[in-house]
Image (cartoon, rainbow, N blue to C red):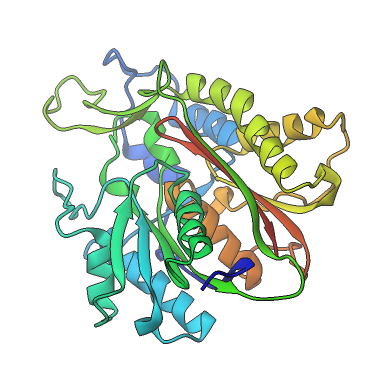
Length: 359
């Protein structure tokens, strides 16, 4: 059976309880990529860091929690929110990048997949419920939504669950200033096909991979501390290159998505963008409006969670979306039936995607 609308019927998220402030990094000795220690004081480093990224705090998982554990909690909350029988889910799609990484380990664990582990944790018996992971960088959760809606639209599925979960705190180099960016978290959504008289849910999407010169802007590399074990790799990035890439390409993808939906920027009520860097996100939105020859950006158009939750990669958009819907710690941001929402993300690959969604 084919459906005329593909909608989100339930959401859930899990934010770890362990708060790590910028001051907690005072004990870390930071080095540049050549292994030279920075002359700047911790206060100077964190002041500049906060001014650029907006991050004051981030959350880390408990020592006994892995990404699959966080994802299970978020998934159960989405199931409860949607009020569905989990045995009726056709697909479980988990967006992630590093699998389960035990605290203190130097290995990622991807066998079985996180999706299989979460399905097992949820005690879902239906073997026709197919569980699998996708690795698409930070835009992974949106790509999971795109994939789910494609299966539903084709008639191959009726109900999917898209989960994102990451414990980036397990793969950071404590000698690298960029380690302060990353956080842990998980989000989930139930995606269903429905029949209704009005058009709602996913209206359009765009998705792209830039891999000629951009493929390794985010990568795994050795510690900035030359005395550390060179065989252990950590998440690394060329921040300035990513910044320039995002400002050039993300607004274009967002506009292309709205064009496909037959919508104008003036129709958009909220923009949910990957929480990577406050300054970068603000500039992306500014450039999007300029593509429409608009210089006045509506107040409150872009909810932000990065200040207190940091960058949890695939987790940032679904956790932010869930908290806005449920009015949890995100002030002055309400959604109303019929609102046009625009989702967008950029990350390792380099991958970009956007979704226009009628709430």
